Image 1: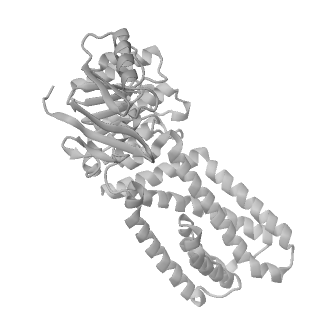
Image 2: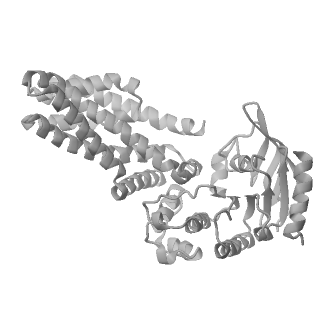
Length: 239
Length: 203
């Protein structure tokens, strides 16, 4: 794990109308490190993710990805990012292969047939590569999203509730893929409000409450019950 | 090269989605059919009255169909939040606009060919030698439903007037001033859209 953070969030504040959703949020993530961002509904987790993804501008403060400011240099940041958002970013009437080819081309990548096949095999969709996405389950669409980001080999992967709607088998599979991406040096920020076993891939836990990072700690050997206890203590204290 | 590839990918995607779902095409054909049926019923068989209002009827059908089509192509992007993905794609966003424009243009040309055919059947018109000139006006006029209606008014006026003259048997040269206006407006609005799309998208 490198020492220099690839993601830096420094005193970010975001106001919608009269409501401050984020107030002086600071967080660092290093290459090959995974941070799970926990928080209640409306705590501002997705807002923070959208700021890092260059979809929203912070009202105050700054965030950088590999040294590039997300608000001032979004075009430098975007090629470094992979985003698995709430929506799967798939077109139901295209096949899995066509979806991948489309996003690769729009993302400025060379969409070679072999690369597409490898990416689809990597997420276990090679047998349905030429089937329309309309016939896919939510879990399969999630896998296709992951194939899209794997194809781009991002330095930073932003995940919004990646395990939502997945069955036990798919969860285990996704854990494996995320571990592999971590091992390859990708920095992961995973937004969740689940305390389940999927937190196992996180090296650090951060709790967002009251518009601030109320807790930032190494996961270490903390089990789901410990995490829940810590979360309750810090989230309620700050809310 | 990457710019052209990205624009082509967006156009191809829009057309492939439409070719398979046929959602927009079916809605537009049904809508146009309904519109023509209502006008045919209202105007009856008075040839003189028909000659005066038909160009307007035709372009009303085209413009309303195009507005409907445009709304639907952006609706596809909302499903599964694909719009976010397009926004995050690196590079000049005007390539996305150009791709969407090309996809919509191709779809509208198909719809307009069908509407023109129905128009001939419903109102018993012999397009004859007006057809080549009419195709030029239709091709140039089709670009404009991608803009808002107030901006369209002068262009709409030109397309209706040119269509009216061509249907009355005048040669394309006789409506040269309207065609020049259409051509100039096409160039200006497409260039302005290309230059501003990135800023509007990021705002």
